[in-house]
Length: 256
Image (cartoon, rainbow, N blue to C red; front, top):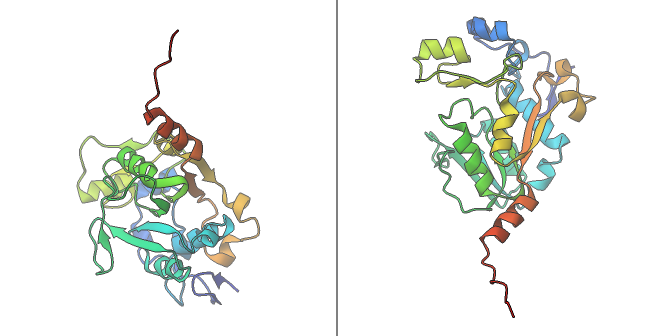
């Protein structure tokens, strides 16, 4: 029987997205990678396929084992993942949102993070970058705030068939955004160049395929989309050390 890794129980079957028929026809045409709307919800805890897949990925990559004692920023935290991450007892678990609706969530702008340099161990921004106006600025801020070796997890819908990320010069209205980008509040559809955004910000890493990290996890059994890779990147320690060295004043050479 299907098994939900979020509520830790077997379920009779996954439930489809309640509004799957409203998916943008352009997203179907471009075969955009994101949620599998046919097996979207757990009938027991109502977590989404994105929740389940991310938790499976984080466990397989050893990230959950690093949570105890860590400083974690979780943007727009999903309730199910927030509960699981909190149970791992990070030293500092910061729940951020540009427009918080929960009292314990802090108002945080991903493009202007209110944290010192080299202060975060982990940043989770699951399906956020398609909403921000300047993803390059957001990723640069994440790089700045991460400790050397710190990790960012940034699942994002994208269309691998697009050579370049697709944006409009002005923010479209809700109906146009839904058609072009898949959702009324999205401002772009990333293409096959999505990794370039992370590398340009100084982060290392790549999109790790499902079969590489989760070879024994059958999508139908665990309710996830095997086409969705794991977006995991990190701040290299050597680059930070070199940056600090560049800022250190050096004595002028002495001449006889």
